[in-house]
Each structure stands twice: as structure tokens, then as C-alpha cells.
Length: 194
Image (cartoon, rainbow, N blue to C red; front, side, top):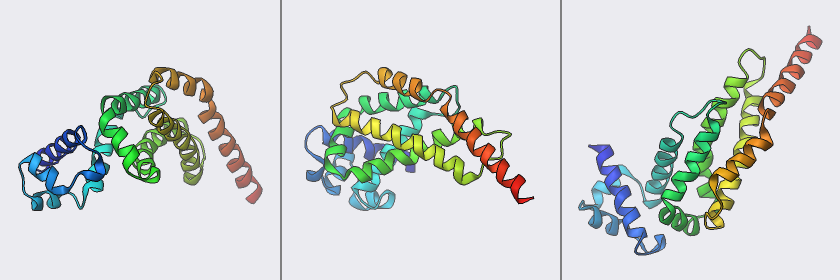
């Protein structure tokens, strides 16, 4: 029942965003549109921004849907762009209504897992510190989220497939090369310490 109510609240917020900007929407508006009382809203979310964060995470997780391997990461990112485009009124309104830092955090949290999956896969059998793997994943995560937010800022006009193709061409093989450098450096440190 909890997921059904959350989805209903999501639908109501998206419906209201077609009529007015986020800063004009209240919890009472969402509850009334959804046909519930305000306390039911607070049972699920602490405020509207908590609902927005949940929507962003849910939508992005569905878009990525297990595309966390080296062979499928491009598809996961493309589906993220397509999800944003499908939810354009919602995403645009959120983008223009809350701080860039907050929306960055929403996307960073989800896409980091995708990139970490790719890094872990390519690091199999290598001696690479966890901190180094996270650094590599974060590096690519910042680049991807930056491109995504720039695309949103420019009203989502460019074809997402072209963006993904450019990113893919730019970083082809780079994750493996970076991991290999960290692996070599780590191996040299271990040898020197013996």
C-alpha cells in the first residue's frame, strides 16, 4: 500500500506542475489532488523536496534498471536521458525551482552506482584500493551529471544518443587504463614495502 500511495503522490505532484511552478505548490495542494489528508503525506515524506528526491531516484533507477556493466553503461545513461525527456515538465520545473546542488545530488547518488558497477567489473583480478575505484567512478560521474544538467539547462534540445556517443568515444578504454595505472602503482608500493 505504501508504494501505491507514493506513486499517487508522484502523479499528483507531476499533474500540479503542469499547472503552476513548484514554489506555488503546497502539501495541501498535493494531498487534495491525490485525495488523501496531509498527515498521510507526512507519513511517507517529510516535505515536497523529499517527495522530489524520491521521484528522481525512482525514475532514474528504473531508467538504469541493471545497466551497470561495461557493455551496458551507455544504454543505462541513454535511458536516463530519455527518462528526463519523458518527464520534461517535472524535471524542468524542479531544475528551475531548487538549487543546482540539490538536483546534482539526486543524479549523483543514482548514477554513481552505475559507474561503480562498471569500475568493479573492470577491476576484477586487479589490486586496486577501494578509494581509488571510487575516485575513478566519481570522476566519470561528475562528467556525466554535468553533461546531463547542461542538457536540461539548454531545454533538452540535443539528441541524447549523440551525447552518449560522444561520451563513449571520449572514454572508450579509459576506465581500464585508469584502473591499470592504479593497479601498477599499488603493486609497486607493495613490492617496495616488502
